[in-house]
Amino acid sequence: MLDLSTWQAKTVFTALAVLIGFFLFFPVYWLVISSVKPDHELYLLSPTIWPNEFTLKHFKTALFEGGLPLHLTNSLIVSLSSAAINATLAVYAGYSFAKYRYFGRKPVMLFMLSAQMFPFGLLLITIYPMFTDWGLLDSRFGLMVSYIVFALPVATYMLYSYFSQVPNELIEAARADGASDLRIFHTIVLPISVPPIVTVFLYSFMWSWNDLLYSLTLIVSDDKRTVGPGLLLNYLNESNADWGGAMAASLMAAAPVVIGFMALQRFFIQGVTAGAVK
Amino acid sequence: MANLKIAGLCKDYGPVEVLKNIDLDIKDGEFVVFVGPSGCGKSTLLRMICGLDEVTSGALAIGDQIVNDVPSSKRGIAMVFQSYALYPHMSVAKNMGYALRLAGEDASEIDRRVKAAAEILKIDHLLDRKPRQLSGGQRQRVAIGRAIVREPEVFLFDEPLSNLDAALRVDMRMEFARLKKRLGTTMIYVTHDQVEAMTLADKIVVMNAGRVEQVGAPIELYHAPMNRFVAEFIGSPRMNILPAGLVADAPAGADTVGLRPEQLVLGEAGLRGKVLTTERLGSDTFAYVEIDGLERPLVVRKGGDEALASGLDVTVGWGADALYAFDAEGRALQVAPLKAAS
Ligand SMILES: Nc1ncnc2c1ncn2[C@@H]1O[C@H](COP(=O)(O)OP(=O)(O)OP(=O)(O)O)[C@@H](O)[C@H]1O
Ligand SMILES: [Mg+2]
Image 1 (cartoon, helix red, strand yellow):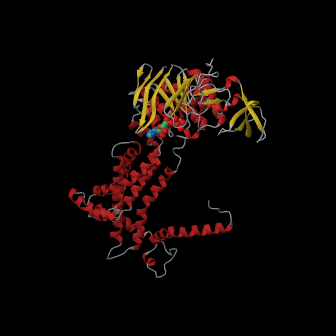
Image 2 (cartoon, each protein chain N blue to C red):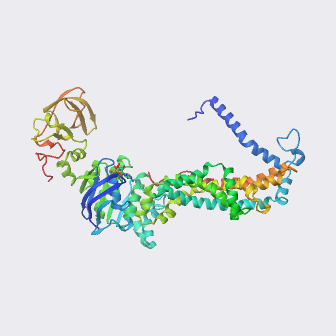
Image 3 (tube, each protein chain N blue to C red):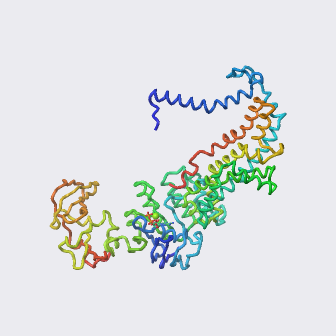
């Protein structure tokens, strides 16, 4: 254990914490203050650490003039549904891998995980012609499918590891009490698995929310675009770079993830299963 | 209520034979205790009876019905797991009523039966709590309550007290004795604890490596073990085993002889040895005496609390009827101490 009893240790520890904190939070701080600086202050040769003047102009333009609201909506639709479907599929697949023994279980699991070994960008090359053939190009549904394909293996594995640790005796007790397999899963296993399921949901939500490459490639029409490529194409292109607008829009794009995490963090608290077995 | 009959039961896990040809008769209302070393198949046998695993071969009958293919919940049995296996997200009342809810009982009947069981176990004030808000002993009671509520014909307990501290075990042991009287239901109980086995059982089943070594009343097993394994397993501290050659009064045909620590007397004519160490428990003192030609020291029980200097030269003797004798295969020979338990 780290012994923080001497003043030297405290000083070193505090200094390290401040340093790490600086690297973590300075970019966020810069993002926030840049979004409220007027244009002329953004381009000063010696930038101001604290804005001399505050303005909400960038937020206004981002909200009312660009495609941000539309892109945000698209992102929400695609990310929420892919996260929901992904979590649902992973729950059943993970449970089956963890608690049932059947022929082909191990190979199928390995096969699924091996999909994860290919570089993300490489798979795009194979997915693109496939989506062209199936007419999934330039559709939000297609994009969602691609997100599920890529997040599902890890999501399944995460839940598989969790379900493996659910004590067999708990399941057997329910079986002896007369519950069917599906009943056991729904009334015993699912209720005690809320934290990992929420984690998996957030994992796949972030995966699609933060994606740039797939959305940029698979979506062509501006009205179906998600927020990542939307920001890029709107604010930073050959003809102009609206840094203030980009900062304000990024801030609003990051908000759902931050809010989601804060709202759901109580589910991460360990010990929900305490008292089951000892 | 029901009797239970097991005939030629075998269980393999892949190539591993875990249970080998088990025959067992359990009468209605009997309290039967399974004992045996770790890994000998006690839990597996219990799981077979409960229906959590399929039997490989043999027959299992509860009442007069062969239940090999009857699902667990239809066998009229209830099992209390070693880990309690309480549903962590349900209140105590919900835990206890789960089986009845699944069976479609109506709410008032469930409520009545849960309350009745909770009263028997003195947990009626805990019904609204979650398992994590309970102490170990309370969880144990809830687990038992969950079994009682189902009004089974046979109760199965897999080492129900092994997670409790010593004092609580004694309390719960008496609780089991009370429960046995009150319910009068057939009960099968697995334990590692000699005292639990000796005090609770109508009948003890001694198992070893997937086989039943002997079945009998506790005192019968103590006085008349059929072989060396049972002789060494029942009784604590365990029986001293000596080569027959060391003992002058060994009967003809004996390969080894056994002497229980409580039957040995220090200072009487017999074997000569040196005291290695003594263990003082207050009520008893156990002396470990090193004897020439014997690998393990001889354990001798003395009443009272008296330390012996280590290195002290002593003699160890025994009464004429204290000797158990076994042949080369470990079978017990019919000698004086094999008095039928009376
Ligand atoms: N699912 C399984 N697959 C393979 N072997 C198993 C399985 N379950 C149990 N065994 C083996 O069967 C043997 C008996 O196990 P069991 O749990 O019945 O022992 P036990 O007598 O209850 O022991 P303990 O006193 O330690 O609880 C052990 O050797 C164990 O390794
Ligand atoms: Mg066991």
